[in-house]
Length: 282
Ligand SMILES: NC(=O)c1ccc[n+]([C@@H]2O[C@H](COP(=O)([O-])OP(=O)(O)OC[C@H]3O[C@@H](n4cnc5c(N)ncnc54)[C@H](OP(=O)(O)O)[C@@H]3O)[C@@H](O)[C@H]2O)c1
Image 1: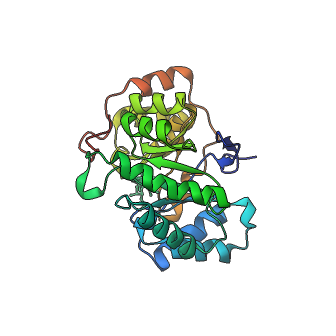
Image 2: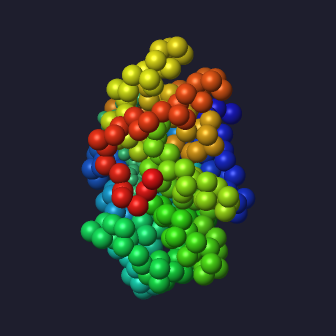
């Protein structure tokens, strides 16, 4: 098996391919369709989208047209961050299922613990109410696994203490020099797989000289080093690309960073300090 079909096992025993293909900021329609078709042709089997990206329908169409067996694919989507009542969350969950039109969603995440226009505010009851709508989808089999994104320790504790089903994933911002160690450790200690969103800092870490030096030593790209860094830390990376060369580059991860290189990379300061970070992360 190659890296695109190797899997991590989630705490509910679901297998999840170790590299996911990101689709944030890829416009709905041809751009998303072409990017996802290219990714599937290259061999990616795990696609990450969200209701909020507005491109679920194009992801679904590309997946259906690929002819790849549904069981061989892993599709993640996300509940809009502002859906903090049970009824709105149930409506948005069902919209995601309809938009994708793939029978089921392999992993559905609460996109954030706060609406995007109120980052860092607390919504304990709202998150529990929204979570109930995900638990219902999990119970009826339309959502094969459920999890969270952008949750800090407080928000994870709230769900773990009061929810019926424990989240199996926390998807957070994670790249060389910005690994959110408190959140990462807490999530892992409580059985969650941590997924790295923006593993290339949306492209902003690719010019870092220390990463470039490691890349040169292996004859690979900075992006490939950044993705191996995640994998060798036990984190699932979600690189986004629309350029076919980028899509291919990010799939060629058949090399190993040495223990010394990992120590160096893990000790680096933020490799994209001017990149946007949620104020609750760190
Ligand atoms: N849960 C959340 O709140 C959240 C937030 C942000 C992101 N995400 C998820 O994480 C995914 C990835 O994060 P991201 O979209 O911020 O981007 P990213 O993967 O960190 O970086 C993507 C950028 O890097 C470029 N790139 C990709 N591969 C490259 C390569 N091999 N060499 C040189 N440049 C390369 C891309 O260019 P081209 O596109 O031009 O090829 C694009 O400009 C998202 O798409 C989304 O699925 C989730």
